[in-house]
Amino acid sequence: MRKLWPLSLALLALALSACTGSQEPPLPALVAMGGEGEVRFFRARDLQGGTPNPVGTWTTPSLQDLAHSQTFGRLYLLFPDRLEAYSTQGFSETTVPQPSPTQATFPNDVDCTGGYLRLGQNQLLARCPEAGRAFLWSLDASGNLEEADLTGLPSGVRLALFPQGGQELLAYMSRQALGYRPALNPTGTPSLEKSLDPQADQGPYDLQPDRLQGRLLGLAATLAEVRLYTLEGESLSSRKVLADFPRPSRLALDPVGGGVAYGQGFQVLFPRESPVQRQFHTYTAGLVGQDGYLYLVQGQALEVYDLVPSPPLFLRSLNLGFSPTTLAFIPVE
Image (cartoon, rainbow, N blue to C red; front, side, top):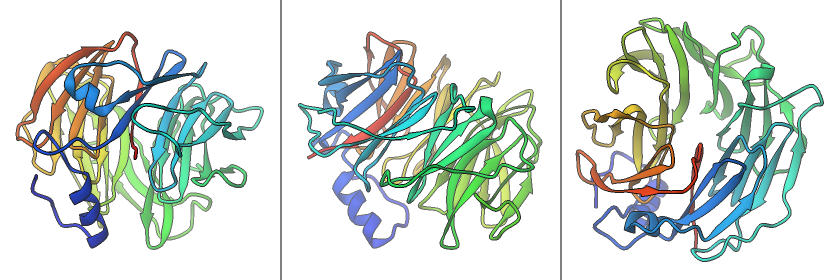
């Protein structure tokens, strides 16, 4: 069992039941991979063992992103004109029934091509960068969409949801600043904004909350390097991550499994930091599972790593037969 950083009792129980790595029985789970107009579902243990045969495939033309909430038992799909929420009740390691989804449609003047999803505690954020807009939907898939107020934020801003002070706040990152504020009231409280030091010349590439530590993690780049910016309390710090010659980079975070930055190579950030790995490889999608494994996509290839050892242990590279752009981890019974 890996060493765990401080957890609440509830999260400790989850961690003790979920972490596996290479030293314990596999956690029954599926890895959903979206791309090229479909979602393919793989048994996590098959990917770890070297047999990437999907247990099910959904046809999803124009799919942009997907996300899964274990708490609400739903898989969310983002399309240019709508959101869809599917119950994952009945999912197993051998079957992925596709029930009728609950839908929420964007306004007629919104095209969410190139958009992305971010999970909060009770809400789902759909960011539509080309339209310059963002929308909130309840994670129980009830009610109508609410539009986030992006007044004063630049067009290239990255967004996420950040729980703070009993509210679910809109977190944002530009090349100049990182901060948060109420999603529907830009002048409301609580709010905080800190200037990036150094300021970014490229990106921002990603922004996600590290919920266990109550902090925000963002990736952007100067002309020379990718930097990880960390907003914790009222303090903003930054440091170099990944390989030289910056490329678009992303974060893969899981409260139990750990945190990884990837792009030009990859680097484990927590619970035990590693040096940069595979720095001559360029990764375009990634996932840290509750099972303590890292899944990284490079074209049609998937690399699987065990995160229990430090540095992580490379297990295998698999040919998927398609090029996914987004991944989600779905524990099943």
